Length: 193
Ligand SMILES: Cc1cc2nc3c(=O)[nH]c(=O)nc-3n(C[C@H](O)[C@H](O)[C@H](O)COP(=O)(O)O)c2cc1C
Image 1: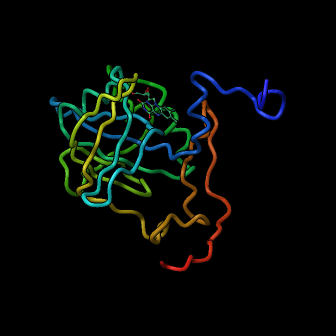
Image 2: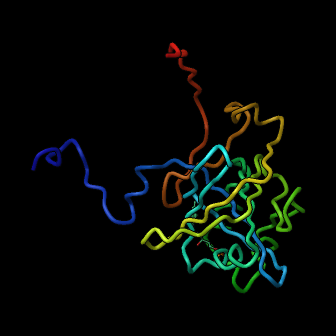
């Protein structure tokens, strides 16, 4: 039995990723070749490179957004505060395949600074990305690698890092459970060697 005998609980299947959360619930926005915008929520995002600035987002092929990003070659990543939790969760629960879910949910889009595809109004942070490649990782999501061509954040909420006192960004714990930033710890600098 070893370590499973009491101190640890087995974590399996679709719960495994919860061990790597909380992670920001990011709104991915793109646009099809018909110029209709769409998007979805993704918690599976990752920074991949400083130079060039590359980020990744894991998107399942059945998502409508998968097709939109493939068609346009562009997407924006939009990070929100907790006051948008209900809207963000809804955008991650319904598909925009046959409906304008932004209108339904009441989330406003606006033109991006650099890209053709839109961004969300009221986002605390925005990354505008050109699709570099789609990586088949051998699983049920593909890794969309984006080159960040523009990135900006609301001054009031971000000073090199999100200000934990103000920026109550939406963090996903798993299922319908979310959390946000609370405590801050600043560790002492290590001697440079
Ligand atoms: C908090 C949260 C995180 C999610 N993360 C991902 C993700 O990382 N990748 C993914 O493919 N789907 C993810 N989803 C599911 C999609 O957002 C959801 O299926 C969405 O309705 C797809 O919309 P679309 O078909 O209009 O693209 C997540 C949903 C929620 C609520």
